[in-house]
Length: 224
Ligand code: DC
Image 1: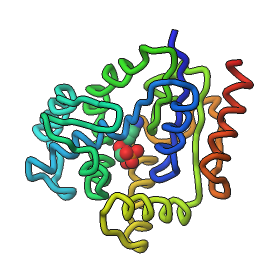
Image 2: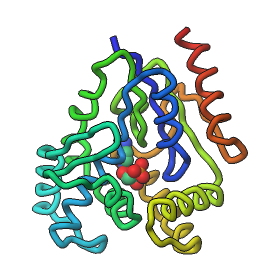
Image 3: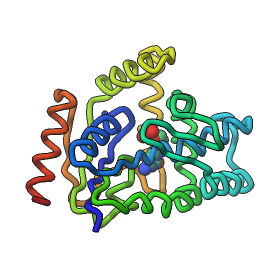
């Protein structure tokens, strides 16, 4: 049986880096579920849709078709969609914002459910997202909800974007972050909130290694 650690939390809380470090340390697989929503968003943007496109029934149908038939390959370091390397491109803020909007469509969430569960096939999985502990893997033995203040999250996102070669400015980032928090927490389907029994960890004053160490301690107290 695959041991599953779920790691949920708001945007730019550091989940991605923490999840990758945990997976590496434990020799587990890693599911970046946000990447799946970003890939659907990428297809929509590619088709000429914008963040202001109103989603009518036809749009929702198209979105769930894209989600169901995502032609994606995750290699160790790369994400290949329809034979194109989109690893960096899907990290743009515009793609993240569109992903957040698309993620509120329940048929998209349903279309991605089995694909996400399919990642649980090795000895262990670290699953990073918004609803990993509440919806996708409700029976996971170890559930973590990672938070951080919005100021520190904006700073982390800023550094992330600059490092990836995107331009960014703090004022826009704080506004984006607030908008995404609002959308992700207030949506009807699978809103962002700590799963029942989740260990809530505030990483505002913690470094990445400190955050990972705390989660490993927690993991050991449950699984070891
Ligand atoms: O983690 P991220 O920033 O890459 O995710 C992009 C968007 O996808 C996020 O704003 C909300 C959505 N998402 C979701 O609704 N459920 C998940 N499990 C993961 C991401």
